[in-house]
Image (cartoon, rainbow, N blue to C red):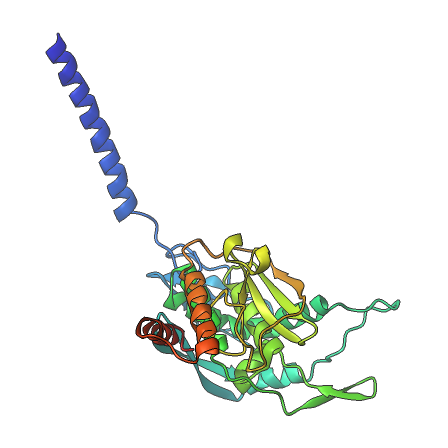
Length: 336
């Protein structure tokens, strides 16, 4: 009787083991695959006209259609503003490896954006906020249609969502810092011309606020929750991306991201474009809701190490062998 009971238990455990094994194999080999924007294979993306084909987003307008204002042409959606194209090469560094994205920009859209009014008015003496201006620039409809191909390219390069964010950050950081040589008149005064995100790409240069808006657009379209940090005393602007609180700036829940040049995500202690460290209070400007960076953010520890090394350099002006090796490795890893 005891032997029969043991055999029965062995058979039951054997069946349970086989069921679990089959479940694991089914999950591993037959799980539904998707593209970098989480669209399932053989389905249309929410971003027309893209279709998920063999885990790569491709244009298939004949099947997925076009968004409003775009004209169907074979499998592409064309805007009237796609005139006088210019090819640009966008550099990014991911874990020490340098790469480029080949991207086509159009003078037609640049001229359209250049002609848009820079002022805003609601009437009844209601003054638009800084957030109003930022959202207007980031959400401009014609611009979005011709910037989405860059988002798609990033999603095709890296299916991993956090690597998509890393590519977007590095790409914008590696666009040269520079002011526009244009100005506009506002209430009788000549003021510096502020570019839309697409114009920053076309011109391949931008100042802090302009580059921050471009990065905010890319991260927003990649599905992240994004804010802008504005430092009024320094008149400086950086991006904040949703992240675990322990990684974030002053426990705000948003990781600090400098855009004026190569920098490590979460590093808020560096000098911004050679003008020293930020010291004033900041305003938080919400841009979009969405996902958060996860807890496997190696940048946080790297930023702490980078800060320590630079503090030592400021005090002693030299590093020992170990610190110097760490310094060189971090410079190479992020293109600092």
